[in-house]
Length: 321
Ligand SMILES: NC(=O)c1ccc[n+]([C@@H]2O[C@H](COP(=O)([O-])OP(=O)(O)OC[C@H]3O[C@@H](n4cnc5c(N)ncnc54)[C@H](OP(=O)(O)O)[C@@H]3O)[C@@H](O)[C@H]2O)c1
Image (cartoon, rainbow, N blue to C red; front, side):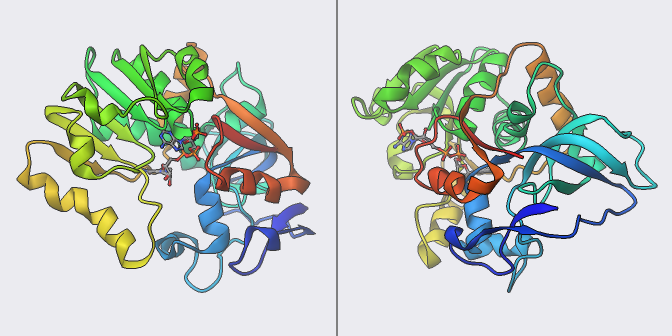
């Protein structure tokens, strides 16, 4: 099969389109004929093997799977002997390792039937980013109807889903984005939009019950000014620092939280079949729609990753296979 591959960690530019063996599947896995792969910044980290923490999941010294791509949409080609949820020909979407290829092995536990009203490209845009938004808002922050929720980085991969999911939960949603993305964030359903080039949202006073911060470009004390007295801050970036500075940055909200009135959180979103079904229902009921910025052919996966790496994607970047 054709696949984008590098046997070792390295720069994005070292990835090559190559002929590889099809992945083998275990008893509870599904072999998916890939139609589209969704990308996000974690793919750039996994290709480089940096930040180092990423290697706990992707392999310590060299990548376990040198093919990038954690998000997939496609058609079931073969199923393992223990697979109960899927059969040949099902159109599916989910999370795996190595979706920038013609075939990917996917556990049935991280796969679901594709929303009927989405293309493969749109479905591949969902898994990691929409689940991160869902897990942050529903599970970590436990957003309630009527609460005021602010999404910092509302125009990005997670932010565009977070605005829509928070609205679907009955929240009053404020999105923070750049000037060129104001109309876009409003079109996603945000009740209020703040242009970060014009206004500092942390100066609005203690008005937000929940802040999902996808950017983390402000100090904790600055951002806490915008939280209600018992408000929740979801710190969701962790990037932008290296070495010990990164560890301090990751740990700081968790260490401080017990000593302040605010709930300062980090959370890790992991893919599950049941939550992919929740996303499918949200999409099919018209409450959530993936927003695709750019679609690249498989042979241009490096350009797709470089584009994400610049940090200015509007919604999602997808590779069509
Ligand atoms: N908790 C988890 O389990 C989990 C899972 C996945 C990812 N993450 C993390 O979540 C973070 C966000 O990921 P993502 O995929 O949403 O990123 P992304 O798509 O790369 O975000 C890009 C967006 O951020 C906006 N932006 C840049 N600077 C901004 C600023 N100062 N204020 C407001 N918006 C700004 C950009 O808009 P402009 O072009 O207008 O600047 C662009 O639309 C990443 O750090 C990622 O590692 C966490």
